[in-house]
Image (cartoon, rainbow, N blue to C red; front, side):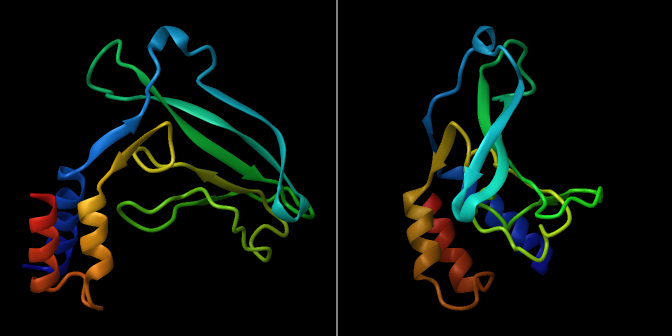
Amino acid sequence: MTRRSRVAFLCVVWLAGCEPTGSAVPLSAVKRPFALKACVLAGNRRADCGTLMVPERRDLPGTRYVALPVVRVRAAAPAGRDPVFWLEGGPGMRNVSGDVPSWLAADRDYVMVGYRGVDGSVVLACPEVERALRGMGPDLLGPVSLRVIGEASG
């Protein structure tokens, strides 16, 4: 099994044992699919915070919508440069956090968009898989780790 196929397997296994928590909203309740308003983050960083409404299931017409958080941290010294869109980590990791590298946001906006199932109004809870992932040794993609994670999500 190649490393790439192990990672794909891990992603599928991780999602298989998950249950959604939170709530999606009906399409009729969505007034604006994208809205931002001024906010202040830790350290008095100027930002725009809001939500992006996305269909819960793109393959079903009339599906409910899920709210994903969006944060645009404004550049400390605007220089008209392109913004940086931050995409963190892998399965189960959050993408919206208060940590903004000051060197990166010094002269360009820094944008974080929450991931479906992790940061939004509907979160997939997988406690068994999360425990298995924390209990593994340093080789997350090794045969023993994959077997234990597979058993946890079975």
